[in-house]
Image 1 (cartoon, rainbow, N blue to C red):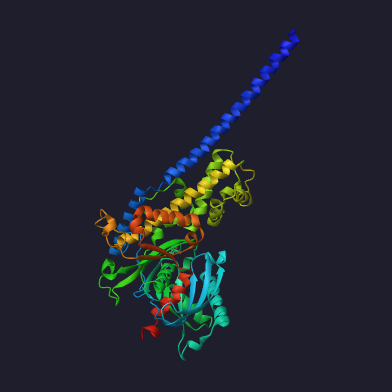
Image 2 (image 1 turned 180 degrees about the horizontal axis):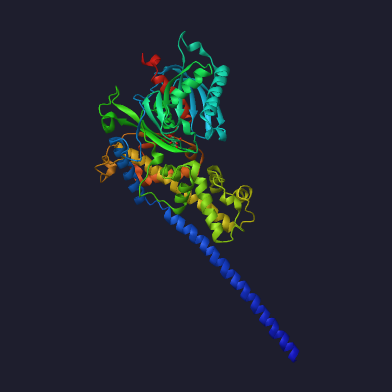
Length: 505
Ligand code: BGC
């Protein structure tokens, strides 16, 4: 080989080495970035851990806080509100009742006809519409205009008052799904808004009175016979169909639970007497907090950026309003740490752009190439050409967030069972009995509603799995979670009926 040939060969070898070095360096960098993304995910997963041991600590904390909230006003972050619902519908209710349901994503108007025999709901009409976004933060005038005009139109279209005796007014059960300090079965003061509602002049006012005035002003002759929380409506419908129903849980846009409590356990209201010896307590568990809850930096950021910081901590980890936004925050961080999603999309910084139904759709995508995940990444977050490997990480984020939420909700439910002595232990003071399989357990039904449980099967599976883990198979066999469709609205009509002078006489 001549000098020129040798020179060329050496040059080629050097160039090849240089290219190889660049490629190796690129690969090393990319592997490092991938490693960082996986690190972000691992760290998140660990911070969200809900081992059964930790869930049991949450159970205990829930039961302890329930006691504290019943012992004194302001004794706990759990408000444990009186509802004045001291008897639950049992099937003897009769007549025609209207109901309004305000508080989730949808607004519902109903008319329910009750036949006076068990399970004899003779029929019901219902109209449902999404609540226009602007009304949630508008004026009280606009909100009441919307409510009363919808109700009026409904009465005009569906009203058939042949079952009203002359001189009697139409009666309305009003489900208002926010924290309310009740002053009677049909009146109460709005403590605060949740779930993105913010109409300042209504806080501290009697919502039922405001509605009554709005109806009179618009010429609608109807009496608010009951003002209830959606959990109470769900419990009422659950109990109507199954008398072993002792508690109700909602896991939808927001989350909450209520249950039947003995009046002597409601220490903060000494001397409270009811014919039944009990009353439904609206826990407002969305505001529950305990140091045992697995809180991450993403939760802290979400809370800090929310209109109600330091408030509704449990709800922010569990309910549909927030899960999508936790997922968005984690994907944003992963994108900032690497280029696995290309350049950081500005859409990733838009709060609430990723809704929980989208998280469910990604989580449950069973196509081999995760085409639904890719579609949502593209259409919603404007992130295109994501590798299958990276799409799988997105699914994993959805899984971690959903699993934590469902398992915490399960712990909350067992907390209630523990408080009322239905968890197979001897109640809050005695803990679990060894050989618990021998203890007598009564059939215990918990009514449940809300889109996370009813429409998101992975969520439902995780919740049920955690219940079995915490309670053990044997006890879990006695605990039945029953979906009560439209319970929050139908239940309002039932409570109006069971507390109406017409039925009490
Ligand atoms: C409200 C509760 C309600 C729950 C479910 C929460 O944000 O504070 O009153 O029951 O959402 O709708």
